[in-house]
Length: 252
Image (tube, rainbow, N blue to C red):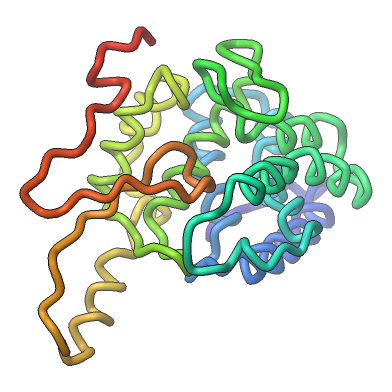
C-alpha cells in the first residue's frame, strides 16, 4: 500500500502492519483496509503539513485503529445483517479496548489516544468520550474521514462496496456533523492515490460473471450514520432518500 517508514520507525511499523492484516481478516474486509486508511491518513497529514512525528503517530494509529474489535472477538462483527442495539453498544467499546491493546503492544501515548478517538464526531455524538470540534485532535479527525471513505468503498459481509462518488457525497453530506469540514475539503482535493479507488467496479465485474436468476426489485442501499455502525437507509428505486441533516441546514 505504499507505506514507507523511517529507519527508526521501521520495526514498529512493520509489526503494526502485521497486526493490521490480522484485524482486516477478522473484520471480513475484501481488501486490506487498515493499510489503506493509513495511506489516506498520511496523505491528509502531509496536506496539513504536520510534523514527521505527528504523521508517524497518525499512520501507526491508522494501522491499529480497529485492533479493539479483534481483541473483542465478537461473531456479530462479520454477520450478514444489522446489529441489535445491545450489539451496537457493545461494539462502541472497541476504541477503548483498542487503546488498551495499543498500549499493551508498545504503541506510544499519542497513538493510543488516536485509536481511542477515531470514532469521535466533529459535531459531537461520537464515542467513547463525546468530544466535539477541536477538542478532537486533528489526527483523530483525519482518521475519521480516511476510515469512513475506505470502509464505504470496500465490500463488507453485510453490504456491497460503494463507488468513489457515493463515498465522496457521503463525506460532504456529513461534513460538520460527523466529519471536520476542513478535513473533508482536504480529502476531496486528493488526486492520484491508488487508495482512492473504490472496489465497486471490481465487485460489479464479479457480479456480471454470475448468471442472473431472477429480476429482483432495484434497491439502493446508502451507508447511513457511522461507517462501522451498519445502519443503512434503504431506498427503493424511484423514491427520494430521507433528508440528511446537512440538507436540512445543520450548521457546520
